[in-house]
Image (cartoon, rainbow, N blue to C red):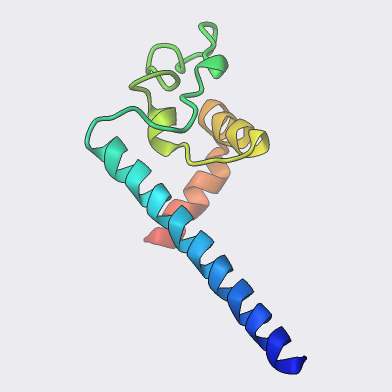
Length: 103
């Protein structure tokens, strides 16, 4: 019985590793496709476009060809909202602190 359970556990581990590597290959292929000019599989954020915002509309931050699709690698609505908020309302103090840390 113990040998059988050992092989079941080993099989499960191999299945998990295979699923991980398959997903990793898919993710890398998506990035290669994007770098080769194909559309991103991630949202372009056009729903965040605000013509009344001081710069987001003029700079084409959202939508096809904008900055958002180049940065967006989020998989949740919370992450997508957080990225859009960081682009629309940047925290200048945090940016300065990060720049100093990089120096």
